[in-house]
Length: 564
Ligand code: ATP
Ligand code: MG
Image (cartoon, helix red, strand yellow):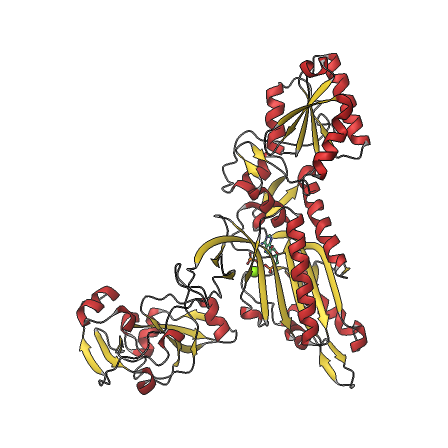
């Protein structure tokens, strides 16, 4: 590609609307432009990287026997009503005049195809995938292509006759994903993730660690524990029982507002203060008891409740139902509420809580004796430093960007959308499904996050839009221009993807800066000094190392470097 004829609109300044490095560099290197919030146009250089990432994904999916589809982005709204996902908040963009929606993912369409296409166990297993646009009603598109409203996803779906079959299909994806992200030059890790509202039986996410990540994960390097904070567990102890067996007592606690004040006023350990949180679950009042300083994890809460809609109860409503304000609520004498508690409180006694009467607390509550707790669940968010499960190793908390997600769906969609097969005994059964996604733009943006320096992008070989960037130092020297043209021709003929900066009237300094910014792995610098000795210079973008080679050996030297 001759830069004089190409469209590579590089920018000297950092665009003010871009805050994270990959977003800034994708704009500055002329890879893409934002059309409107969360919607990006890929320009030629950027699209080459996208295609390379897609091709790696495609090869590894094909290698596990997956078959490529191309499914419509426009879906009938009714299909999403049938699956029960039409009204998930911030999910679906729709075209109202035609009762169509833009598919945010494709479980529904896959199920529609399978419902008529799969008849018997002999038709199973199947692995189906596509690489296609997805649309999502993201409320806050940001961080460039990392969170778009329109984005490319590789999504695959497995259809199995048995749960063992699902495990196999899932494991094949786990291994394929590791190969994909390794080939894409990413330094990634895998974490256990929430199956949450989707109601599946297992799920893992692939992440890169990044300060800009929207996910939070708990990691313990030595023991290998890694989990999304949504599900992360620790071996923090239960608070246990005190020897005393005192009766509940009501204490007047005026002007005691904070947990610290309450601890001092009642002279109790903070762990004995049971905090009451009040929610509605599918509309019904729910009281959640937690150890005073622990934080409720809403994602764990939803899993514990087996899905459904949760929302904190608002203050006026709470007062109407209980006669007290949020700080004075407790489990004793509370009517019409389901009460659940965090595991740390299992068996606990000697607890303090609100008395459902403003400015009063109850002491000596024994959950075994005094409260009908409808289940103890792991509901708290872990804290850094707590021991990883089954170890003494302290957990560290980090931010991550999710690259991909693999998910054992089970039979949720096959039940809802009637995907059934006849098993060996002639019984009609729901197909057991899995679903697996990878964000293609996220691969490219994460690759840039991990492969860059102050001067720009420093592409790894597998995703680099081009391999080689030929730069003539002085366009006024006829000999330089002639030799540089020949270099360009030789590299291209050897099958190397090559950029040639043949632009006139630009200083060498300007060209070098541009080359570092767009970041191809090898620069071949053709200058008068070297030519005197029949040589050109090869600069390795990543290390800055420079080597002089003879004109004849330049191509083979770069080929050798690419293979290293
Ligand atoms: P997130 O938790 O980041 O919102 P998600 O859980 O909604 O993502 P999935 O539905 O599992 O994502 O989608 C599969 C993959 O698609 C994700 O792992 C991610 O790489 C990519 N992806 C999801 N949403 C977006 C988006 N808005 N923009 C770009 N890529 C996305
Ligand atoms: Mg996710």
